[in-house]
Image 1 (cartoon, rainbow, N blue to C red):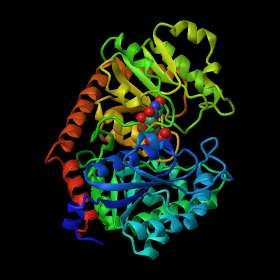
Image 2 (cartoon, protein in one colour):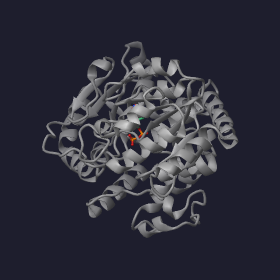
Image 3 (cartoon, rainbow, N blue to C red):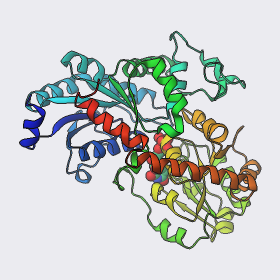
Image 4 (cartoon, rainbow, N blue to C red):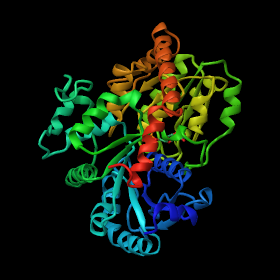
Length: 455
Ligand code: UDP
């Protein structure tokens, strides 16, 4: 390969290959990372699956390579993503190897950066001796909790621990019942999936996190002890650069004009992310909880939100729509970052997915947390008990409890205190991104690390 100086003289950029996972909450941070590294002078190739592929016309500055026809792989249904992700990991190595060989020959690859749940690059990268960096799209807390949950691991905790009310000895910030849960009919595939993700992360040359040191320093230190791999907490990734088009779905920008007409900090924004589903009865409880709270609301009801229905909004009771006609707005997909940054939004009722959590923290918006699966309970516990910028709704979705919780968050003194702490965290986000701030410094080190200037 050409030496650094010579390459720069000839305008040749160092080549990175990025492998995202085709879910909204995974694709988005990877594309933000890609933009960021491109702005630091790297050339970027995105290797993507056929399903949920990013739109190349939004990224004319990247190269794209597809992992071939994966139409035989059934997309994730009813929140059970294990068969889909396992099949994708099984389908991809041969095609990936061919792609990589060809690319590496034409334009040597400096490093592969892959989502931790896309573990298929591990073997091929080792074989071709290409350094491999992992992007964890979860919080460091969830990463650590996942590591504790790995079956057969030395410090393993059996999955029954998920029932426990007590704090964990290994990780006192969370209770046994907050440990990550992956609900699936395919338990063996899940255990293999977790073990492979764990292995891929442990053996990577570095880990990039969409979090920042001011938020998760203690956990990042625990992670470093556990994995002895350099960690680069450079988040929140979406705040480094300006807005970019990372959504698979068309956003309803009309809601911003509606927000403009609402009183400051009065609106509760509601979304349970891109993947999880509810039952019709839960949807109805949510609706009446919102209606009875008396607060203005902006609610994302995705067409596929309710199991077995292709138009969830149609299932909302007529009386609910009549009662809340002026005070609430139901949309199918929001420009979430812009919504959270809007001065009328005073709270976020969320499923505690990590992107949603970190986007809310970045704008100083306190949260009402309804975690369901995966890492969401860990995030919700940190929001409610460690950072104390939200409330966790426990024990099911019931209109009376929802109404009370919304009032606690949006009206009571308790909520005002949470808002203050959330605003402090927003300031910390801003200082971590400024020149000399931790995320900005870690980004410099990551660039040096990739270029081999830092070991
Ligand atoms: N999102 C959005 N509009 C919506 C709902 C969600 O743009 O109406 C985005 C949100 O900004 C976040 C992502 O979808 O970046 C959801 O990721 P998260 O990790 O919160 O949850 P997941 O969907 O992976 O469960």
